[in-house]
Image (cartoon, rainbow over all chains, first blue to last red; front, side, top):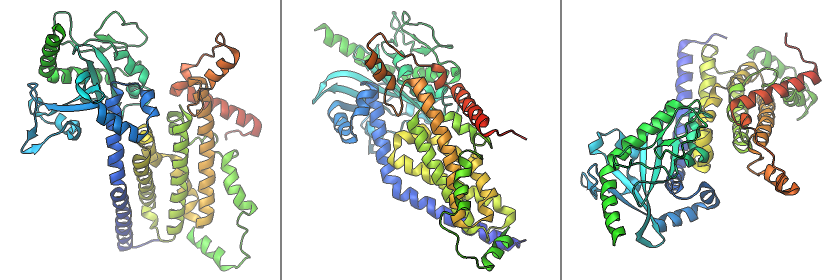
Length: 255
Length: 227
């Protein structure tokens, strides 16, 4: 059966409109639920940098929300490590800062949220600082949360996530086993310079005596390089904040 | 094709039983004798990629069942109106819409699964099984038969990926559906008895091996030879 061009075009237009309406309708209906799921996932990732994945998996969404509220405080700082409370006339809060959008701005214009993990109900009894990081992997964006202990040097934990890395290779950065390799590593060297932590090429070597190197992921060196660049980049940007906390914490410790 | 179906409507036979022998065959054929993965060798990519654990594999299987059945139904309903010259792109549009729906639903109700599977759910669009069934069956058959055919093919796909996932998770992580079977076994026999997991099974290579073994066993039993 041979149809006229007019028929084909009409058919295509109707099909496109119907399918388009269907999709935008679904997106409208499910949108709020998706936003909620995303916000919860963000909280899980932030908490993942300081408590174990098993603990988080055992919590219900309500428990995560209340745990987050009682244990996490936050500030937003600029590239000089100074606290920012509003930008362009609008109040800013760490929870609403979009890291990805800020990543596209020049480094000195970005907002840098810091999440502070503290003892329950007492936000001056700080246990660690959590810094969001963002960068490029092999195929798409990668991001994460890095927790520093109060000495502002030792890594307490890290969560990494990705958009489109290869499963079994680059996507392994989301595995607890890979992320655990960062625990206890240090970002400053003995003379006090920021050197960050670098994932090495190859896998299965023991780097336990080197505080700035972690074992790599076989077959995913480019993703690992992306993670390294991301950490270096953002630790550099947070450095003024980190230095300021480091000196004030050192003073506190001396008393 | 459409002329043929029109004729069938004309000579009024008594209505076919809801699950006649022919219709049962539509479902059962793709399970073993004409399995999309092991015989037609379609959809291998996702069979290798998602099958490290049972849970994501099950979600993937359900998604594929939904997409194939709904796409078959839609295309079959539209089969007499779809312009032949643009039929492939019409099929693609329908499948892509369904896949996007699945992705949106996962994102709203199972965000963890969405993060884990989103790449593969997107790839259902290019899964040859879906387009293959639309082109080979739904375009020339009535809606109900098309649903059965799609369901059969999707089940054929599902049981294979679930079987692969079962062995990969058991041998690779010592668990099934996240339940640590190996730990229980060690518990039964005491501390000294430790089962070792095989890292090869977690990598895609493990899926090749398991899939190869399944195909081998199946072809030995059915005597199927490729022409």
